[in-house]
Length: 443
Image (tube, rainbow, N blue to C red):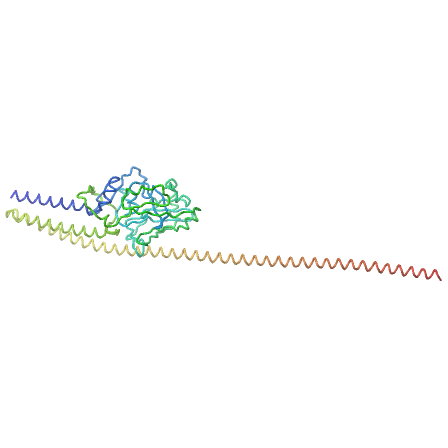
């Protein structure tokens, strides 16, 4: 009997080790694991859910901090100066946990940068997209759960410093972010074109006019080896980026991965995360977990059947206890599923309300713009009418002046003529008097 008990214990341990070894392969692909293991640690925060935590010394560190923005054919591209940036800023999402800090959630869709934007007439800002943000090929960015990035996770700069290669020297101070955050507009503009995801963000023409700079578009050269990223750095017209097929990223030939299993769970609701292929992976993991539990229970039952009657009684009691616990767990799971369904409905309603509010805000902004355009047109028309009236007044004044001048000239000429006539008449009178005097003298 002792041999049977020892054999069953060994068999149970082997099954558990096999499941643990296989489980480590389901959370992340081989390429991500090997590229990022040098710069951080891989952590299992939930069953089959593996995330990456960078080894960062500074407390004030945030994603999308050390680098620069470049305008490309695919939109705004984040050129990171960090050794892990060629992966973590073009694949996956970032989120902040109060216990772990900043964590990177892997995903297999490439983009120039996975960020959300805020802007006004003076400042432009960006923050990492949360794992709740899901990219749809027809719609763009959708949020599977209501989430607002706090103001202290945003970077804000003036427009004339936005494309500076040392933009991190011009970030707004943390004490001033809150005021800028409240006065800015929210924007995400992701599209799918020519087989690639594009991050259009803030309109390039608007950035050019506000910054007063001529921002040139640079070419992206796609490579499949991270060692080729540092070649041809002198060529300023092109940027090298790592773009791999999904099959290469998902592939896993490693026999073992060093993944830390933490008992502390994160604040992220993984049931509401819909990034890339991870949704299918979590479903497969849950199914495999159920099948593994069934296999374990079957093996244990087969080994216990060979024991004596006394041991059999204990086994029967344990089985009944397990069945009762299993029934309780099933009831709890059903209750949890119903609660989750209600939560999903509420989240969908909240998401629809948020989208409606955004649409209404956009409509109001468009109405304001149209009203401002109408006011500008009215002002222009009134100014034109005033100018025309002033011109007509000037013309009338000039006409009156000319008539006055003509009248004055005519008066002068009349006076001259009158003076001449008087002179001639006086002369005639003198001549007459002289003639009369002569005649008198003759007489």
